[in-house]
Image (cartoon, rainbow, N blue to C red; front, top):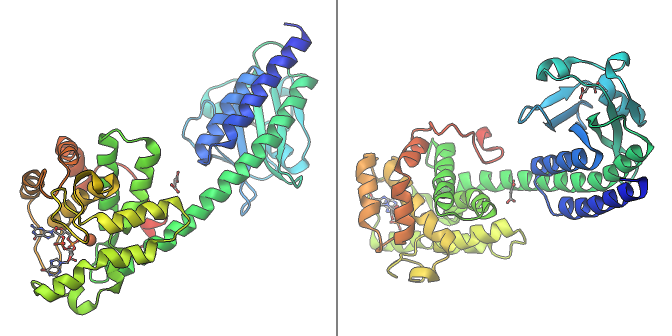
Length: 380
Ligand code: C2E
Ligand code: SIN
Ligand code: SIN
Ligand code: FE
């Protein structure tokens, strides 16, 4: 391939790159995508994307080929990457081990042999360095001027997408944390095991959604939105909510309004996540046969999210101690869910739930090995 052809090919890859990265808002996936694209475009063997931690000034990377899933941290100024971050200069070297700035620690960690390195600063639109790209071991020959230019260009495209994803993550994390703290005061003002309940609802619902083959995004929404289903209980008096015994008819009528109070709290939210939470709050006590509340919606008229959370909610209520009831044995709870198939619950949801019995039991016993999915939840 001559130089013109080569440049044209790269231009095409670049256009594709711009399209790909502008739609990904999950930071880790975005970084993975960028690393793969950069490696392919520059014909390197590996690529690492380092970001500057604004608090500690360290460079960190969760995405470095050869170090899948392991987060690495480099002290400010250390190594080639540190030099690039601090100086803002490009580094293009032919033999890493002859460069005194190079640290071979990563190589030792991965059992890899770095030879050529092209490292450029990642600058945002204001010219501030937010990270470093490193491409390692060009497949053929050495990195050249064209490579430098193209990596800088990719860097400017990537920086915008990275900042966007960082903003999105920090926003939704702090928003979510506020919301979950509210959910705790609302629903669990009587209870000790708050975090456990939220986690159960989130994971039972998420696992059912996964088992039903819903798209990843929907699964994510249901995981985050489901713990808010009873947020309307914030408006229910202690005398009713915390009553140790059975509710009178009147008290139960008042209690049923927690669904509508929830809608009041969550409606008009701009966030898509909260709109889903709103549907769940509204409809998680509807029954498949139309005998639920608040509206007596039937079958598919009940949003799928709510049909899923209904099963998760009742299973959790049965298998945990409440002020008004002791906890049930797991077998009895599974039997109850099974008996209510087509009555309280969507038969498809029940089938999936029962098929996943062992996974559900693992969540219940807290041995599913997954870390808490809700940001900040471990702080409760
Ligand atoms: P919750 O405690 O989160 O229970 C959610 C749902 O789980 C209940 O919705 C019900 O469908 C199911 N469930 C819970 N415990 C039992 C049980 O012992 N047997 C059966 N068959 N199902 C059970 P429901 O009934 O519409 O209640 C909504 C909320 O009203 C409950 O949420 C709880 O906060 C409150 N509540 C219901 N009954 C009583 C009660 O007798 N005393 C008190 N203090 N609160 C109650
Ligand atoms: C360095 O930046 O000096 C080492 C990093 C690497 O080998 O990828
Ligand atoms: C995510 O953290 O990837 C998704 C959170 C959200 O749906 O807002
Ligand atoms: Fe409820």
